[in-house]
Image 1 (spheres, one colour):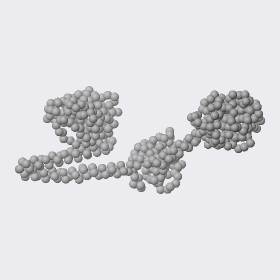
Image 2 (cartoon, rainbow, N blue to C red):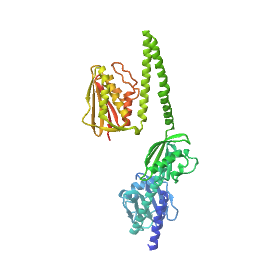
Image 3 (spheres, rainbow, N blue to C red):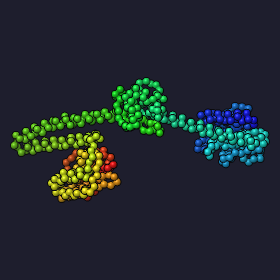
Image 4 (cartoon, one colour):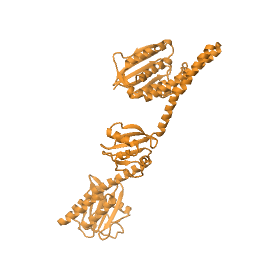
Length: 505
């Protein structure tokens, strides 16, 4: 082959890499092969990516355009018994000078062609087998080692082109799947590159934008001109902080929870969850809390005042007992209101109210505060607080103190007269542990998972204890707010141990 022919071959082979579809790659491979080697027929079998099934079949004659051959069964026989199968099995090329004397050749029945020489080369890259190409000619010993090297060069480049085309097709399929998913998910999703340009956004994002145009490739700041939520996101990306926040779109009257995460080393994934219904309920709840704290508490005060006046003028013991029942009901309502408001304080306590707390000192203060209550029931309080350590934490002092008091007062309430309540603290694994152990009535095992739920009250065989079931839920919320956790261990008739852990770091 001349130098000009060599250059022509290199040019044609290099053009394989410009094709992004497998069929186009195979078409050019067949054409180049027939042209450069001069075989009378070329067949190409392309296996799937798992090398288990035939993905494509091509056959071409030198005197006619290539055509796709729809004879899968015949090619399966060739793969099982013929030369192409031998090449795939051994992963090496084969050169046959005379097909009548070489056992690797499998003659096809009813074939109009009678090839006498054959050349077959695997299409491989990095030990991955893509397929096999086979050339035939009616002349004995037509193919030479030179043809073998030439065909190997073409197939090496073909393997790269096939791999590239498959990768492109896979990416196209994945992108199409992603676009289909984006059309169905309710959340708003955007992806921006390191320069803030939009590389992908879901259809739901367009509900916040005035124009039905393509925003891909535009900078996020362009969206900020249309709605304030995009301005907040753009500002957050510039600051590289506040990557989880809530914002309201006044233009569309919708609330969103925004989460920003790194999608690539410099790009970002932005997800907006529509929380409008939840925030509407929250606003309704806030209104109800204001109603509880003022509009309901005020008439209770009035009722209490009139009850006191009536009690002063009435001497009948029976009527006085009725008035006492009214006072008791008012007291329960006030306790319930106070408990609900405490729950809201736990949920909404701002971080700026946090202060440095000496936890063991607080535990001693709580123990001293509840001591008279224990004395009334003739219950012994055992102090096992670690007085040699002084663990401190940044937090809401009122909430942690209420958590300790709730544990202690609960233990005293559910412990019979003459019982004992042990208060113990410990510092371990950079955490502070507070535990209250009693000799009370205990809790059934099946009820333990629910004792920290609001308004849940466990059944027991002891005396009736007044309460609304909010105390332990307050403990859990207060401790969770301080990144800690709570637990309980109990046996019916064998007492209970309640504890919580707060990380000190």
